[in-house]
Length: 408
Image 1 (cartoon, helix red, strand yellow):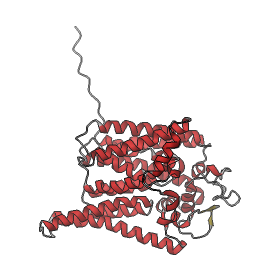
Image 2 (cartoon, one colour):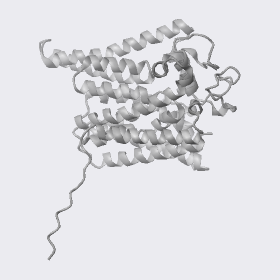
Image 3 (cartoon, helix red, strand yellow):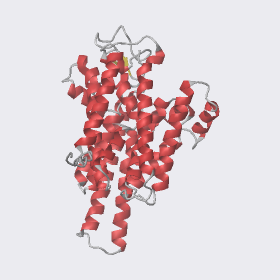
Image 4 (cartoon, one colour):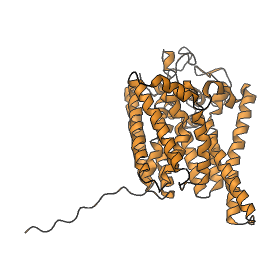
């Protein structure tokens, strides 16, 4: 008779942060490679330089300026920052800022591209893409660490890297990935009680993307509440709880002070305050923009409308899931309080931003990441996390495919 067969071993993903980092990096590399194949190997096509802000006659030979105005996007402004991050000239490398003060306030991504390219303008398009691939990988690692501190398997940290807005960042050379790795790194440092590191990372975030300021607002609020609670209990300042609350307060206040100073510096350099320079173009009464667009989308008249409606549904469902978990989640109060202004940003987006998934999925990045963190740390509603995972993965894939078909 044949000997009994040994029981099959169950293969499990390692509960290590490198596992989600490896998957996130592989996805980013595969998507970037597909984008480059679609672009004929021309990384500068991802910059999406086009008139009226980019001039083919004045651009360097390494930058492809597309002929149609509709092909232009924000990547051309990050490219300009990557070519000359400190310049106040009207035109640099064939690119003119539409809103100089606002674009220079979002400085970090372009400045890192300048450093990564070694100051060579011809390498800036590759540096922009490379930074986004690298930070997508880093988000997988940091997300894995956040998952483990939430009592989850590290593999769940991949959900942070699957935020659908990041597919736009990779294909349009925008700053959400770079800013988000600073935000998530800051949140991880806060969970580990490393206040100076958290302050430094959150400062880097607000110098890269202004909407990330909602996170230090929540951190400062949580620190202030903890400090006030410690005072009411008459705890001595030397106790760990009181000292921790002060550290957390400073971890939020320092980035906010840096943010205000940076805004004032741009007003001095360019004559207007960045945070107010585009408010009229982006904001409306709460829910007014969303309601306006839903009126136009229902019923959808084609594939693009259906995709936009699906993206809206995905974003709203994630925010609703996080709201359901808000009171029961084990996420720190800093993340719960930061979630409130992050969602408020989404609520007041105007009809123009809701008219394209490219805009509202990027604008909702902070709300999406914080919502993921809240759901990840909630152990009461066990069925919610797999649903969130399936939704994010499916929508990321659909967004990536949509971007590939659009690239000319």
